[in-house]
Amino acid sequence: MNYKTYAPSTDLSTILKCHWTLETPLETKPEKQRIVPDGCMEMIFHYGDIFKQYNQDGKFIIQPKCFIFGQISNTLEIEPTGKTGIYAVRFHPEGFSPFATIPLNEMENRAVPLQEIFGNEGLQIEKAILNATVTEERINIAETFLLNKLSSPEAIDRVVKSSVEILLQLNGQLPIDKLSEHLKVNRRQLERKFTSIIGLSPKQLSKIIKLQATLKMLAKKQFTSLTSVAYEGGYYDQAHFIKDFKEFTGMSPKNFYANNLIMSSLFLSDE
Image 1 (tube, one colour):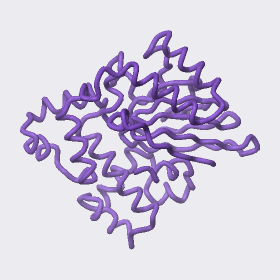
Image 2 (cartoon, rainbow, N blue to C red):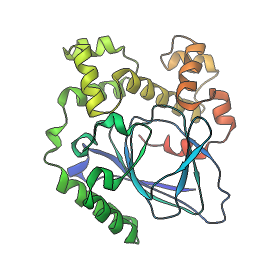
Image 3 (cartoon, rainbow, N blue to C red):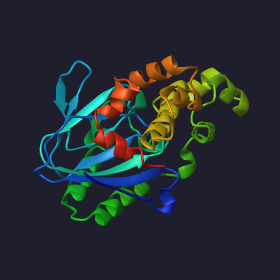
Image 4 (cartoon, helix red, strand yellow):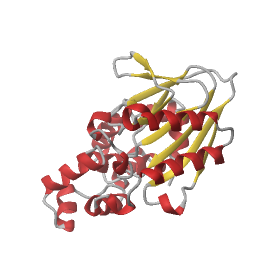
């Protein structure tokens, strides 16, 4: 797999985490890949062949050609139907909220067609991106589209933005009660803000950030045992670590890496 990331323009750096592309040759054997949530929504364009998306019961649907993928909150598997060619925009956890036209909780674990979010404008950007021939052109089209729809980067709630920054700095190792106390915001109010602006609860995002930090530790082999990973990752014990790991991946840490999950491992390199 050829996976590349690109920094967003300065004007969109508070909204976007990165642009990325993924390509594989046609002769590559299609394989299911398990995707681990990272707390970020994405705008995805398949200029290659489309993907299957498997539900927890093993049944699959065919993803749209271009879509916004909502927050992932449980096990997700995808499988290419042919040659992979993907261009995508990854938003910061709170970054998509200025563009949302439907409640974010209605997008959870869904590939939502661009037309459902943006109407005819969604069809126009879909056509423009798919007709583009190089990544730089796609990035320019996507950023122009987003800038035209963005009234102000300051439109994102400051409390939520500060909350996300703190959770990321501490790798999710901060109880939500302590977070709301630090920000001087009622916990229920903070939860309502997160649900409407991020599409996850503070606890869910905290657990995802903690999991991502732990996965990077595992990927870099910076540990002596799973018990040491659990404690360094801020889990009460190894059993708690395995429980949370299974919640989002559907398998144990040991089995996760034994299964050579290429796509999940690729995305862990993003900072």
